[in-house]
Amino acid sequence: MHVIATFGANLSHTLQGHYGLSVAPDRLVVDGVTKGDGAQTSFGEIDQWLVRYPGHLRVAGPSPAEWGSLFARSSRADADVIAIVSSSRLGSSYAEACAAAARSEDPSSQAARVAVVDTRATDVAAALLTLVAAEGMRARAPTALVLQTLELLARRMTFAWVAPSLRHLTMSGYRSTLQSSPTDASELKLILGLANGEVRVLGRVPTESDPAHELLNHAVKVAAKTTKLWVGVAHSGQPVGALHLEEQLRRRLPVEFAYRRTLAATSYVYLGPGALALALVPLDDLPWTPPPPPDFSETRRPTRRARSLIPE
Image (tube, rainbow, N blue to C red; front, top):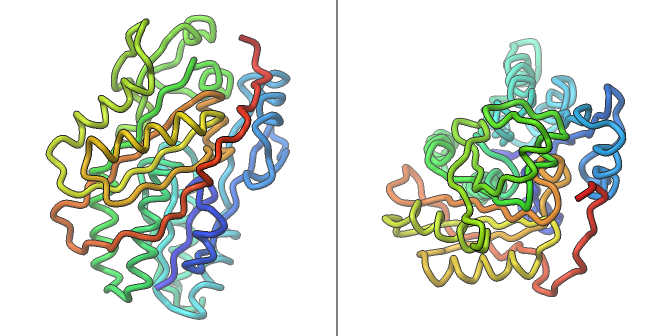
């Protein structure tokens, strides 16, 4: 079995190298023109594009041809390939990966058996599911059993975040039930999350309350009956806050494994500066239970907070 993930899964180079994972590229497209790939684009560049081209910045996943090339290369070592992709509701990556997978199973092509997993989330949430698949690959677990586990976890897990405003979400042109004018959206302080792959309001942050504290309380409520939990924490300029959130999660929940990262550039497009994101993956009653991976979190040394170019 070989595992492929999209760049949006926010996998560190150390993690990729440890398991020998392949990563499919994501690109940032401004007004129909590709400006850069997720791996090389800075938060500052994204801010500049949003200011210059509000509503015209989008994330584009790999083409079917790129997926097909990855599938063919991976299948040379093992015919069973698992592709982990961000929510099918957030872009076309899932559909294009499925199209490439269908072609790869044609008798005239290489004998790859490709399964595409819709994580229904992105960033560190998708990273945690990638780690489940990677541990399955390392343990030589039956592919069918690992896929059953991944599909159950994709339905069960939580991906939520808080941000100082919704300015990035509205300026990126995202269309959802949250759609409103940038002026109105910038005043909202909400706990947002992905439900069935789409952005939904999960809670509201009281005016005087710490958003990170409210996110922690939400996590404790959601995972109250869990006995074993993997968590992911991501930030865009709040390394100390992300570390504190991880520590509080460990104190209040049965956390077996934690993965902490700066947001992927493709997630920053929508979440913006000062955001904290959280993924919760409960491991109770699974067809196959993965062992906890090594610690792949970013350094514990705080870094300087990036200043956004988006007007306050």
